[in-house]
Length: 230
Image (tube, rainbow, N blue to C red; front, side):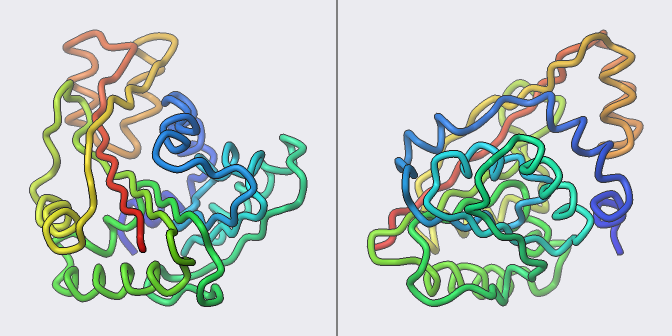
């Protein structure tokens, strides 16, 4: 189990606090595809960063993740928000999605496919091929796929980790996704909170950078890839 997998299993609330400091993405998603009254799949839903905003307008929402602990927190979050039970949660691997053929209008995936499609994984190309194939299978005609991934933490312009660049290149060149980047800065109350809320996930190097720059707002860039599937 990787360090991040352990976090997703055992430090769900700490992770949830950290990502709660980032911008909400519903309007950006809506600008790519209006999802009101549509059937949505949130692939790698985690604690519900995307699900919690999409569920409010979706016809139905399926939330999948490999971590049961994250999905338990997702359920708590959605119930506490009083969101009508138009959603289900399923523990699942991205490469074998337990969803019926041609049943989904929009797939969203936030910061998740990268764990199977980075070049530190010898099978990354086959993994990505399987994932994209599964997304095509579950989508209805004219469905849309929207993927969010990191383009660098602690940087004001895109500087993605080297182990992700081939994955990003494949999305654009092999699978025909459009792409842009956005800022996803973490906004904390002070420098100490910024260090305490990020070091467990990003490590000592970022914590040191936060201290040196006296950042209460930690810059982060994200990539957005999308494709309308005919």
